[in-house]
Length: 591
Image 1: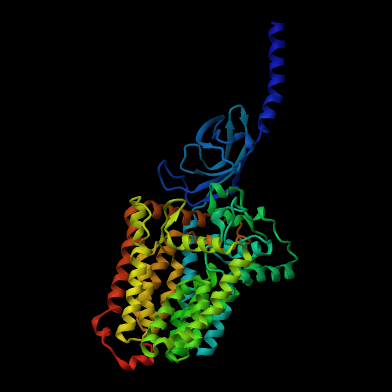
Image 2: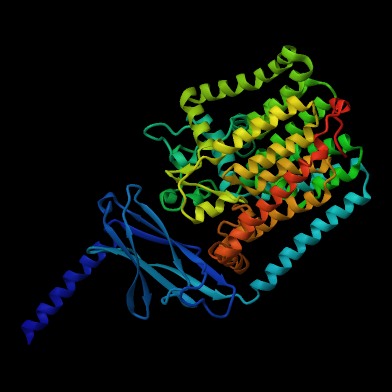
């Protein structure tokens, strides 16, 4: 008996250091958020749409291609949750749904095991928050009330004072909001230039993940660098390292890359980054008032909830291109063709769509002036030269241009069809279709036919044909993101198409409401992890339910917007508008 007791004690003494070494054997687990306020008194059942707790598993290179098992604790027993395979990054982010049997109110624990290695135990707390629905409704109601009061002020105030008020409102919203993923690109592109790293092409082998390149035209990028230099001047912040701009979880959760740049002074940088976006939005309102002679045109633009979202909150550069496109049409209508070409070309250097106007301008001028029309066309050269210079100075000109053309023209992402937003090609994505370049096959020839018609019909209504060109783009391109609708809204306002303005504002807003968590747009400097809030979890459940409901999803994202594009295109192309009208050479907007 004494011998058996000695053997047992010896085994226990040996097991203790073995278990301790296993806990430090190269796997570490963490979870976020630490507290989840779930918006109900009971957790969802198995198979229900569920909020997923983020679980980060960090491991050494020894676990490359090895199976790592995530476990959860129920009572005193550890149960299987899911298997993962170690990758070359050494970091996997996965999601532990609250519909799993092990999730419960109170403390929850998870760990990872592989072979004889047992990670640390990571814990999080789930609390019931039955008031989340009430707070969510109150939040949306408050936003709707603010938008209504803003629009009402537009009806009451003079042109000048409404523009001043709009500028103040937009500037107040800008620092503390943003689409977290898109803001990362506004921030990182300029930093990479300052690091002497090419933001347009990650290189081979890549200096940073290739998915995080700046895949647009380059005009905004040097401003991003200037913004960061001013930010450093105001805050004393250091230039991040190249590796610091890549969140370790990028390989398994690339949309969380925004977490790589979050600090208390972030609103200062965001304000600087958004300044040209906000000013462009407000100036577009001023220009619409000038072109129509009506202050309500500015109200229809600046008090539009979609324009507020894109121009003040989101952090998208589309309003910059839109201002320059509208200004180009304004100058063309006044007969200042050099100015028109210059503005449109610099707009295209920010985001490509104003380039659609340039062949339209050239078609009108060539019909009227023949080869002499090429003379003002030369005004596009400064923008072209600047674009080429920026690509060349950033890295390799040929590879940068190839990446731009391939990324924007071919609808693939790592060889698979890539679709997003309000387009009928969502149906192709659902059917797992191959990646057909429909834009190249149909969109480009259709646009060429538009240019030819403008030439042969002697029409010069750039507002109308600009809208037609954008609609063709919407019908053939695989990405029609909600921010793209600010391209066409000013043209519809100039045409006084009130119903179309309403439809083309409501459709993207409904998409954003159903596809995004409202709190995702709050600055992470204020709300580091939005899922701490019960209201945010409820919003996320809404997003999951929408994206997993095939029929409603395809109806909202594909059928409904495509019908709107076709109906408006048919209205724009009604035969009565095809009649040649020599007076249209003066190009008065149909207002």
